[in-house]
Length: 181
Image (cartoon, rainbow, N blue to C red; front, side, top):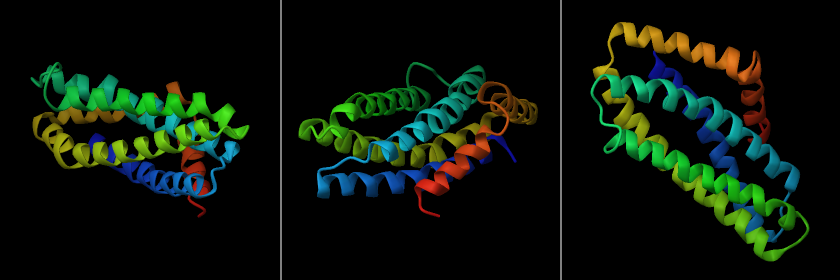
């Protein structure tokens, strides 16, 4: 599997959880209640799998290699992707910060959890579409065979050393649990 194929596969799992998170946000809107334990599971998945694992591979490995091959870092697609990663982190931080008050019944905090969860879902869906249909195509065109091999090895190293053995599988199971599968 090429590095971009690996990332696209991770996108499929992330999209499945985004769909479930949207339904959760709609439930919060309809009931004005937050299931704090369930929201913490979403945060765990998004902060650790989507950001710490997936976005880390992009930011520390793929994007850097693309920059080495001539892509600009201060403008263009990579700059947009990095900015969107930061926007996503801001949404998740807002959910995390609002959760204690929301779980205590604070209506304003409950609306914050819902709104930032929806904001994250919408942002990530558009972000993934741009990566899958624009950026990764560009990456595959510019990266050499050696780049592809090096990145694939580096991705495996991130999963084994930074995330820990079995972590990837744990998050796949969590994704299926959240999706009710």
